[in-house]
Length: 350
Ligand code: NAD
Ligand code: DAU
Image 1 (spheres, rainbow, N blue to C red):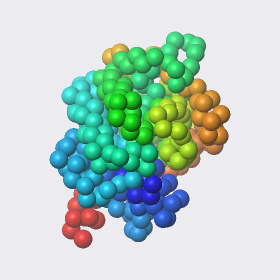
Image 2: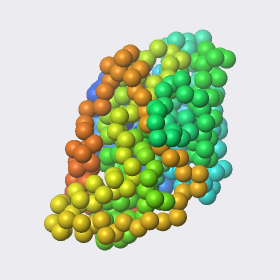
Image 3: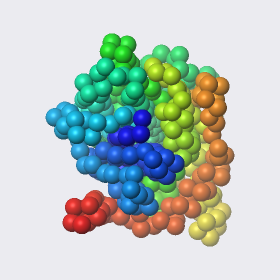
């Protein structure tokens, strides 16, 4: 399975997955299929874009004709599917985009896989990258396992749950070789600054208020994105067909505690007096339907395939802050919108 289409490869997690596959497997052919929505930034892959085993294709997974044609011409061995609308707040204001990309887009890919791989399903693989949010919300105790019933609350998680069901249905109905992983919150480099950690780093750096929803009591389970990409690699290569794996960091933080930690790291890095950045914390109106707590039990992945997170959160957060401070150009181009010219300048005009 050497020719792989990775969808959403210009986004946050997708770019780490593309980098991992391109650099770890020089004999693979990696095609990055991405529409380049506001969340897609090809500059994320500047360091590997000249590699001979990497190619970018601009395209929209909601366009069934385009996807069919791509399968016909490229004849991929496998798909690793990450393309999605990924931000919960945006799903609350514009749910239909999430239905189109996350549900219809996924079914378009499944249909193409079903058609072009027919008769040889055991030689191909459809890997769907999903989220722990499909399981709903936890109270103060307990963890999500692979057996937890689906109970999505936001339009985002409802769309991801729906796409998971379609992927399983194509396995059960047509025999497609599929695997699904459901991961907790990722953090690390190249994260779009609409999400909590990069938004907070950006705002603290620029002395702007740091919005904390509600009382800041919500809990998320944070995983370094590079560890997520490694888990995807392991699952892609080793999981049995039809399997689901939870991926998580065993690393729960209340939002307010996380932001306090971030503020103190930023004080130290920016040479500010301790406590200075925390003055920027501003409690704002809560997110509608805000899930209280997520926590992943990743025992199955450790037991079956030997994967474990490699990095302690405090160390990872420090590394992440260092990356954003060392890459102010990246953050500036994303916040100004200039990053959208990268494709035009580097790929179209060349
Ligand atoms: P992201 O928003 O950073 O990137 C999404 C990518 O998909 C972008 O490059 C975008 O251009 C592309 N895309 C969107 N619509 C498209 C379309 N119609 N056709 C082709 N490409 C399209 O997202 P992310 O945070 O990197 O998440 C990637 C995947 O991982 C998603 O499926 C998400 O549900 C899942 N996930 C994310 C997290 C997390 O913490 N960020 C955790 C678990 C699972
Ligand atoms: O759990 C996995 C999910 O994690 C992924 O499936 C999603 O794609 C990803 O975006 C992420 O969802 P969250 O909603 O948990 O991430 P976000 O960074 O938006 O918010 C993290 C927490 O911080 C959440 O409880 C809401 C809160 N928050 C968020 C923002 C943007 C704030 O308090 N203030 C903010 O400004």
